[in-house]
Length: 149
Image (tube, rainbow, N blue to C red):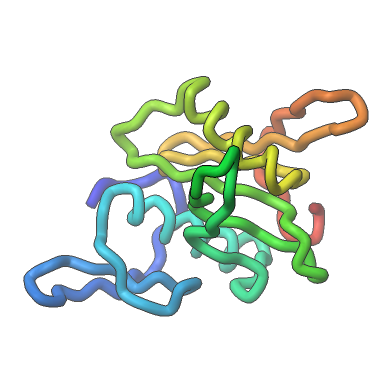
């Protein structure tokens, strides 16, 4: 897999029934090791090991209903009261982060109404804080630690 712009971690990778899989620490099961999953697992480990996020307050593949259609957020971070706080969208390193990706995560936020939107392809990372009173996004230079949220 490609080297990412994230700290390395000890990935638990196995070949199961001829398919390469990686342990998803949040779902607690092996999942197909796709380029997007490689980014997801790196980013999740980064949040836990370097930013103080609790694995018990995060979930992967969170289902939601938007305009009668079923959608899935790649990851959601929750407050301690289990209110959604952040949506994280991952793309494979080969996928450029464009306005289309921001539109996708913004649609998910119509339902969840979080304070932070994060997008990463493993090479570039974007974090926006939403100011609902002013109706604007504030791009942050760095991803805040959990205590700063």
